[in-house]
Length: 350
Image 1 (tube, helix red, strand yellow):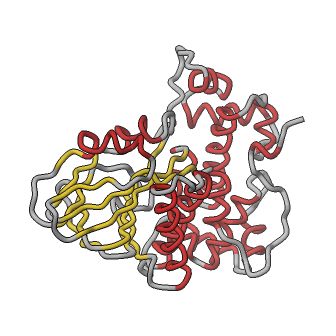
Image 2 (image 1 turned 60 degrees about the vertical axis):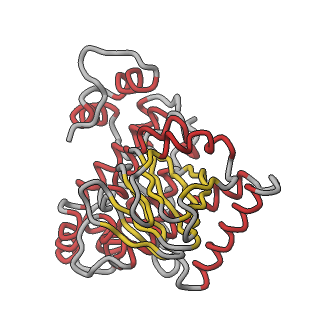
């Protein structure tokens, strides 16, 4: 019997009071793994160039498919800039995130950038003990973190995010609590050594999710894409239903009834935000789930097909091959065990 906890797929059809949260449902599946990895005190003038996260990943989280880098400015001021891109000024409480792992620069004052890996590589083995660098002037304190996730499942979240964005978390009581908790944990970990790695890792995840939530809340009204759809009261609840129970034989009529609007209005609104039909979206998500389970479990293909909503293993094989370029069993062998095959690489087609 297949262990359903592997999938985190729920089959309950009940609606939760007050609606459901699409972001939370997706995050249950994506399995974020985070940590705070760098505690810095920079004195002006200073300028640090950070490489793409793919170069940092082997040091931070070996084997991670996707690594998202972010920096929390605890005190002082700085700027963040991507090569060839605009510059963003940062103040206390700001979190700057690079969701696609782009190279970037942080600094305060005019100074030639130094490579972060070259200058601070040894500090990464010191936990969260403060690393100090700069010209001796105005002090800026950063705590840097990362989130590791599967790029296949996290695509729904990351695709709608810009290369760099900034959110302030210190402008209300909840954000201030999080800010104070991070600074306290960093002091404990970096000073007395009594800080808990588990607590710091969870704070890293909470900080990332809270930043993402605030980014979604601040999206302009005309915004399209998954994040804007998740904020919409109608489509957001529909997405939550689809992600909560992806194996259910959904129809447009079922979904429109659940969210309380007509079929025509629901279908038009869904396409407005996501550019495809609800059934096409569901089919794509089922395949992403299936690919993840193929790589993370030893369940047979028939069980996986049933779990993600396919009544026929043969039908599942056909659809999977069309999307990924090879049948499910071959995909598992080539990606999980590193066995090369002749008919396909197992890389999703775009």
